[in-house]
Length: 170
Image 1: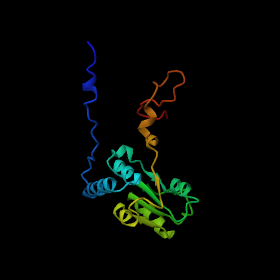
Image 2: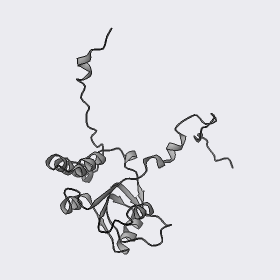
Image 3: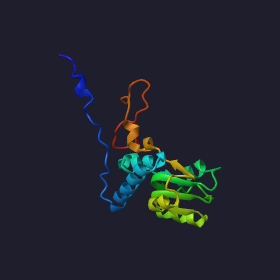
Image 4: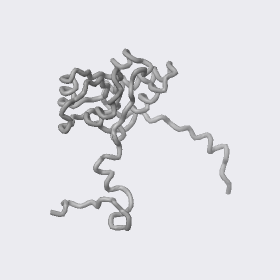
């Protein structure tokens, strides 16, 4: 039997819709879906795609990493579709303008204390609807603890995979 060549191309790839119950995220999806359709900006399409991602793919970004990535980009707004977390290792927080889905309380306090601002995505859409003057960033998705256990089996030559154990060998 051969492959039905016409049937192969009939399969339509469906867009992943957000499974979030959060009404704010649902409204943001609708807003950026509209902006992605009505503007030529690739920025809005990327934001819309990232808003619809699973929680695993909306990885957090620490304030220290954010500060290092934004050095030399004065006057620009950092955009993160995810959470901004505080970092106690960072003593002096630079003045930053940050837009994110969530901020931890301590991260928000340290950004505001440094003279920066914490924006929401609806305010960003009003300020720069085409994404001008923004820097799009994302957290490391492979930094999760669970990722350490994926890969070649533990014990196999050249494997750096961590085994699943109850204790850490104390």
